[in-house]
Image (cartoon, rainbow, N blue to C red; front, side, top):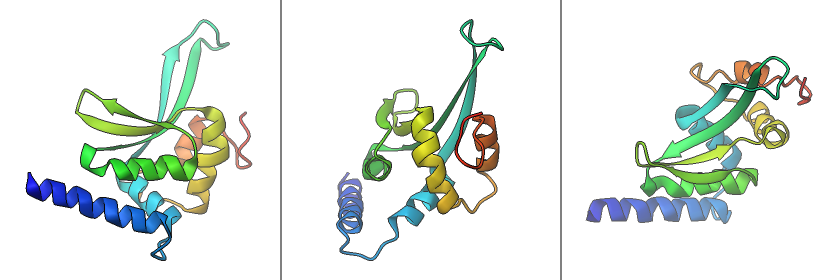
Length: 140
């Protein structure tokens, strides 16, 4: 338990220093890199009588972590200024999530266009297309 506690303290100190600008850390690139490995761009479909085609499209961006890395999730929320952190009881993790289409279009998507993901595992262009968002960030 002592190892976990010291690990949490170490991570907390590093994050505080990065946020307080004691280090010359490019937080935006760091968050993109973190999301590249731990993030998820998701589009859910559900039946809906309110929508013309009988389906509702719900895009979201999320990052999940164990409790000892909660500070990373707080960094995402602080940087983006939107979304929320919740506990996922199914696997005992915490999740930072943005579901608001307005916030995805005006904040999250522009961030990842300016600080792109480097791996092929994240299908960011597909997410933008599925979210029906064009190059100017307008919903179609």
